[in-house]
Image (tube, rainbow, N blue to C red; front, side):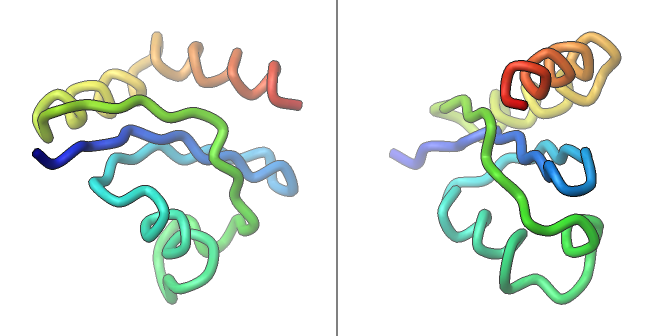
Length: 85
């Protein structure tokens, strides 16, 4: 059974965060920090993983990612960042 991860990245250098989901967190993290040649995350390297949640279905992970991008979700992320710094 495939497992999905919702993750939050934080760039301390630029005070930016990024929320996404994947089925392979290690490779996705490498992509954000090293391998990617275009996209939002290359501008704000380096990234740290500050939060992860695991899901058994892709649809549940997508729902959680979508929630974290709402106003309530952004407040949750803001509190995580405050605890992390």
